Image 1 (spheres, helix red, strand yellow):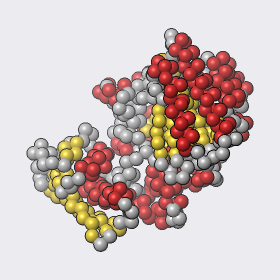
Image 2 (image 1 turned 180 degrees about the vertical axis):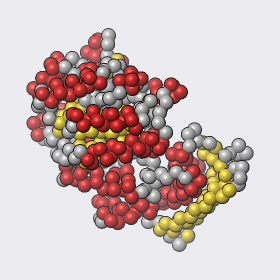
Image 3 (image 1 turned 30 degrees about the vertical axis):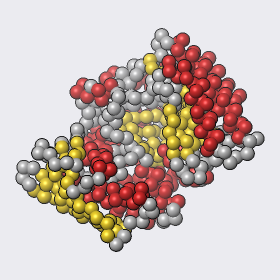
Image 4 (image 1 turned 180 degrees about the horizontal axis):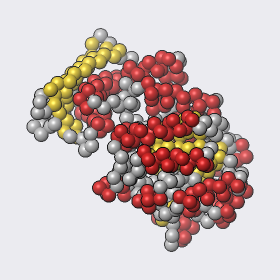
Length: 503
């Protein structure tokens, strides 16, 4: 689908309009110069007058030349050229979305929003002093978000502030993400730093040496600055892919070098692959007072697991869940993915039925996303997935099931190329919400990434400005350069927390 945007001369409008066009069509291209091959022409007239931005769009479809029109006016409230341009883009996006919705008869429930974190917008307006009703009206009129999605955002906001009442005041603390880049095998949809662990014990040992170094240096800095840790999250990869002895050494080091570990609000270890869970490893977790883990079935259909490269069985997932509960794991999360290859409402209903037999403390429902570098994206023709309508039905099934079984939504995020332009939603039993998930999604504090492929998110405590910094993704490069990357992070932390006295 080639769309010619007529009337706008500023190339800075191309990207937001391209992202919106991608919501409607596969393999879309937006051009701002006339092209005889274009399938659609959308003429957008944008002007600023008397402190207001006004836009009108006319979509002309070939070969019928049928026209679809939309107009929108918004008061400009921004100071500075950058913010003014941002608002002008919103106005242009508004009419662009409107004519595409009319032309395709597809309603985009998230409106013009194409970013990952829509709930941040709700928080932002609440912090600015708007009432909940004023925020709702703004999201609907300016961003074109449907009532259904606004309701979801409001529920999540309420749960987050109940679980973390000081959510807006944790900027002087940090959370820690520890990345362990090994898995039994790599899943077809995955783009995380994850390397098959078989036969790579030498590389694992080298990696752990670097990881220990990073933890020691970051821990020393936290001790000297008197900076508290809100949460620690062990991710990957699969952190339970390493041996029980290696896990024991890692958690012992955490208690040794991190400040006040006993009072960290939450420590989570992803044990997502059931084939990595053993009684010995569960015993190590219990020894170090870690009782929040993830055991991720993704699907309870064995053919699906085989198709996506997960080598555990459905029975193993169930067995390892019961083993974890018996060992004292009191907060288990399980993940399901909507839209996996070959799955529709029947298979998803089966996964929900199986989940009902276990009733984990939290359930994260992901919608399949075709991530750019994944095996599934590179070989799309091999993986047949459900269409938009069926994916929406599955999401509705998840919403109804969780509500009927006493779960509440507490965080969400969206991704590029996500099926049906939907979202990923974390549900939990009230009081069992993951604080780390709230921190990472709402971006209220610095998160220090340690380990291979770990991403740090540095947030200025005064301005809220965000800077990203990532460690190397492959173990070999990480092993060669972990000292350099640790030093860079420490320099950035010193800059961000320069006004704190050294203890």
